[in-house]
Image (tube, rainbow, N blue to C red; front, top):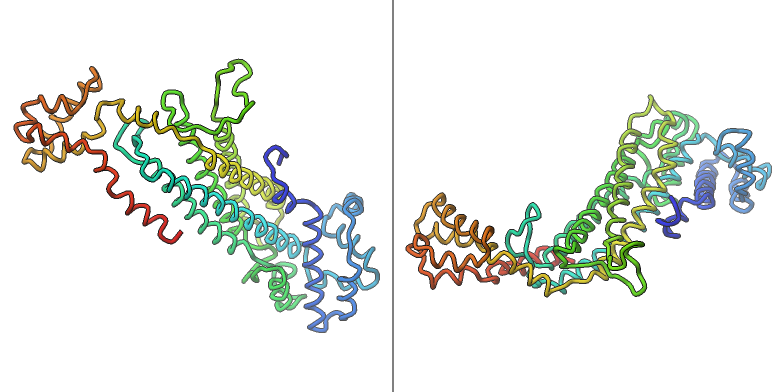
Length: 432
């Protein structure tokens, strides 16, 4: 991933030094477990912990000859440990190290992403409560529909990311799998207790049946959840982008002093951050299909998944971490324009109350079909000629013969549409 869209804490997970540290811990813990079983001398296990080191440049040099990364690491480790290194990797296969390491790295990444989502939830909750009763027009198909509140928009986003938090926790648990089962996963040359020991030390659970690799449905699940979270990010980004359009102007990304919107047009203030988030969401979702393709491997193992995961592991987690952090900032600093919201509410002359009039007519004994015709013919005049729906209805004898003109005005009460906001907020935030 390019540095522009990367944060140091997440990037560090995928650096070679962290990878080799995890490899070393897997091998050293396995040695401890083998020593407990009496398979290797206890002094050999201690020597690995005491003298175990690695040199990245040296590993790269060895790998140029061996064409095998795990062997290169083990060779370099032996150069530091000495004769006791002959007991390292007893009964193990490369996938035991590689797959268990990837599990640890994805768990580390998930912990950062979980914190990111929690930060976003806090920002969304704050803005939801701040604008709980800021009434705005709701839109369907991009067209004015009925009133909602800005707070309800944020509450909807909060509920979605609360579900994402639950999903990510489940994905973290699913991916936290350890395999130390040897060639083709039969434990022929290593006792299952070694796997259980290493799993506990590394904060993982033992894989029930690993063939020679951890089954890739776990990884597919993990990356699929990252894709869902990316889509939720784009949903918020799209809403902001629409609300910032000049013709709408109800909300806007914070535009900092000295910021420039266009190299050609000095007046421009563009939604560049949310456009960027839309693009990053596409990137993260793009890694879901390769993860799905990795599920079907040949027999007990092939390495067609390996090159894929070297890309998607770092790129998907680094990109999503950056995107979530950027979205927190966007939500925190989002500028809301109540006066423009009020202006847009009034723009269609009360058309947003058409359904309530329709329902009132049906309650007054008019068929639904006729009620629809009566309201629509007046609504279309407002669309085409302007004016206020209430005035037109009040002068329509077919309407006032069923609902007196004095009883029409109360049907245009904004409070009617916000009376259950507290109920919705209780549902969303009661346990938050």
